[in-house]
Amino acid sequence: MQRLGLFSAEIPTCLLFLLQIPLAESVAPMLDFLIPVVPQADWPAPAKQNDSCTNVVRKVTFVIGYTGSGEIKYGIVSTDLVDVGFDQLFLQTHSVHFQLATPSPTLGRTKPAVGLKVGSPVNGRFNGEVQSVTSLGLSAAGECSSDLSRRMPILFTHNTISGCKFTSPASNCSQLRSQIYWVLRGFAAPDVIAMNSGSQPDWTRVIVQECPVSTEESCRLGCILPNSLSIQVLWARQGLTDLPQNYILGAKYLFQCQTVQCSVSSLTLTTKVTFTETTVYPEAPRGSPQLDWKFPFDFFTRGTAELDGHFITGGSSGWKGGKSFILFTVMLLTGFFSW
Image 1 (cartoon, rainbow, N blue to C red):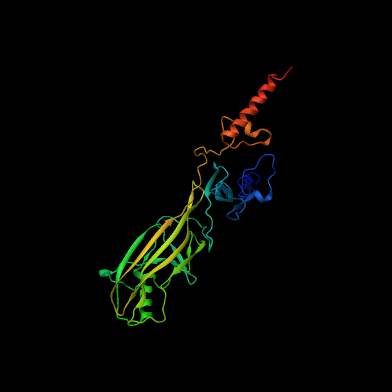
Image 2 (image 1 turned 90 degrees about the horizontal axis):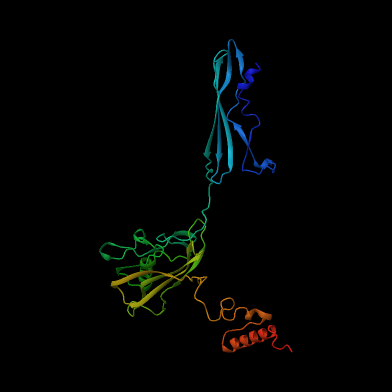
């Protein structure tokens, strides 16, 4: 029975640990860096039964999981047990398999905020609810529609212009104004607009300039109604020059107005979306030499501007002073004043 111990399942799984990351030979491994090899099951010990041995290990398989950075996350060992006779030739095999450990999904995991991609929808917050910012869409026969499902999303850096013909039998200025605002901007303008993308983006304010309302207006004298909407979006590239990120800096809803008498038989409404880039690019590190650059760019007075803490600023007087100083130094060194 002592020979059967060599084929026991307890031998390859007894107190086996793996190093999570490579360590120097002089560094003793700490418990935090040790990954235990876990057996998949509790295997029975080998036993002698008649003229054969039972529960003999025929195959040992190790599975080691690792991350993309090379760290070992877990170790698993499994065995195959067989019954063999005393006089039967037996071959025991061992194998090691490495597999990439996939992280378990985390509920509510947030995506980091990154710059906007060209053509991605622009999002806004309407009364606390995040939705896509839309503009006037296309309709059949060019007629204006109050159906919000026909509105088109505003895409980043895409300048658009659209229009339609508005008609209404309403005989009230307030009702007409509400209908036209609904067609031009939807149910409301966004309170804030997303500067970047991600599950938790940054937000910037939206300026809204509507048409003035007069208490003395009437359908007979005329109503001050909006006839066009200009959505102006300012954006810029920020971050490293090799990997810039697109950020929206602000937006403005500007309504143009005109005086219209009731009822409106035909009024042309237009919406224009304009993206304006305001990126300020840094000066090149090696541009053209400037006149006010000092040492070492001043070739002809090299070193003179650094002596005794005196700085020579450019110009003829500074150059004359530098030449006089150099001449005086040379005369002293050559013994001109020696007797």
